[in-house]
Length: 407
Image 1 (tube, rainbow, N blue to C red):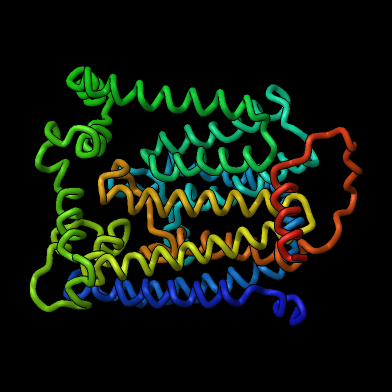
Image 2 (image 1 turned 120 degrees about the horizontal axis):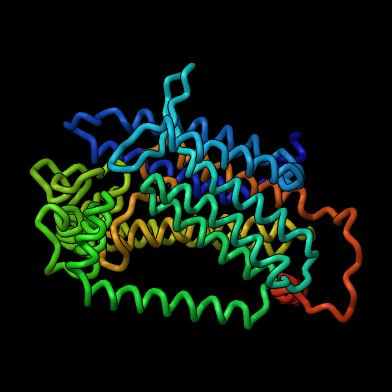
């Protein structure tokens, strides 16, 4: 076991410790003198469990996880169905189950993200770097992703549902989808987004009435402040309006940590969870926010290097899925407070308060460490690929990386 632990990339461990320090410090500031005071202590306990998950997953051969991924997928999807019937509802989303023995809630939609990465890695591994066939590969993979997507959308959890689509897109690309298939998908996506936004603005009142009738008025209240702030009600725009003011008030260097007098972020809901970036931007300014983004960048960079250095096939697929998951969460969480994205319920990785999100993210990094430990071993049961087969994008990137190292 010690020989395995020595192979862990401890620069990533240092980054995780720095993110933990930031999370605890900002949570203390955000919850001080509120009913949520003490959440920083709980988060410290979650981090302790998170590091146990990180090191525990690291020493498990990730190929075992890929091997049993179909069963894990079915288990996770079963939880998504169960939560629709007996789940707890918070902030209009029915997505939490309570563990009876310890009386703690967890979110199956968060848990399923890692299971989806493992399952898609299992599906792509069967192709052995060959181009993906549209009907035999792309369609089944998309279908098996959109089924849980629909289940999570039924729970009113748009943020986590969209993460499944981002994971799918990233893994299909590295899985060697044909260029013209990718181009068609990109055109359809761009056309749908542009057409949807245009139609939404042109027929806003009709769309609003429709969503009111089906009981989804809160969807409009999240989209209006993003696309049509002049149409948004005072209550609907309250969150994003005050978040922008708080971020702007931070300026270049911030207003200071634990500032005594009333600050703008006190008017922003959920500063301990989804809105924690607002507190960081206000207290530490542009410089502090940039430092956090730099930590994320270094973490993603290290994960990509692990992917390029591994000799086994499924490892890079999994890392790309994990990277796509993290990048989406970072971009969506920060983007929704500066007007780039609509407001959704998504946490800031490793920073926001939340046990399920943190444990899944830590376990995901553990999978990457397992790939670093075991991924240098040659593949078994891997038939040779015909020389006429197209070279995968991953193989080209890895070859380039190896050439740079030799140089």
